[in-house]
Length: 179
Image: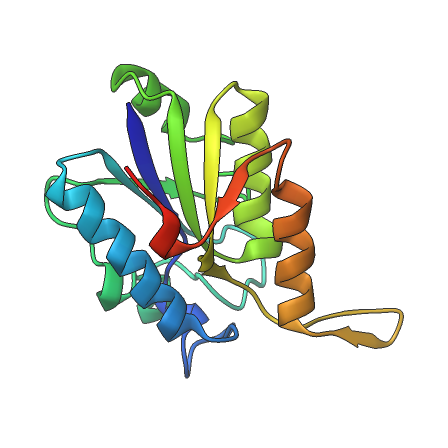
């Protein structure tokens, strides 16, 4: 069976949030399309919600508006929400136990940020033996910098999606996903 894993689609990543990403609204609308497909077929949906525990954290601060899951992908009462504190959604969470209990062997993953929590979670899922599909246009990130140079979000995103494609996951677009 296949489950949809939605990673960290939280208010801090949207306009006015503490860590605004590039194009979060369109990304969340693509995730919403996936969510609707999984809901129509009554397939498992797992929302991952990050709560920062780092001292001096500037976003995903517990009990803040920014830590809440964005309205475009709000979980329904019967959908699973797993709280995490690290980029890897498996680290010190019950994600693997939930997937085992539901007999899930295949994952469709999407969310925010491509270079951080999406990448970490997909690689961990692969290491645990899951077959993964990552939805390219249902993930996004932000500009990064290294050695005084800015790396544009599009380049960051494309690099990480290319790095995941083939060995770790099959990277697809929202409209090409068939479940």
